[in-house]
Image 1: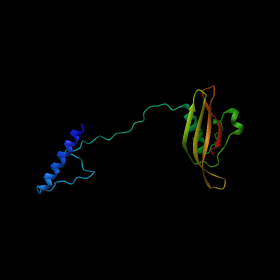
Image 2: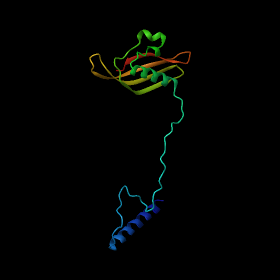
Image 3: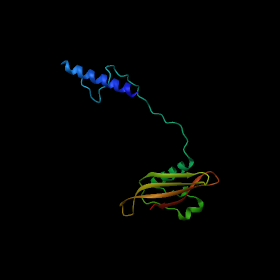
Image 4: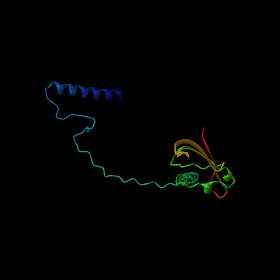
Length: 152
């Protein structure tokens, strides 16, 4: 296989050398944008992206619903587990979040999300901090927030 590769390469080099020695000038200039063939390239029809049908994990849906409510200015208490509402955290002026990491453990019925939140303090200064959020899966198959705390 190597022999064939080197033979083809050698033939191409010899051909180039002979054409340059004959005094002929090249008819075209080759660049990175020039196709390797003189034939026209086929035009491909424009493709319209379609969303592949998939189902989100119910824990992901619960996390997104909570975060979207919080970003829209709601307190999010309706997403908290009954047993955890006494320790429910609330954010001041949240603007956007970005999911950094998640881990869902279905057998133990817990999910952990680490996210970055852009918000402001009461003085109006911008704050960007990383947070951890725990979800629990209740017997009703619903996921609820059990803890939110700043990630160190």
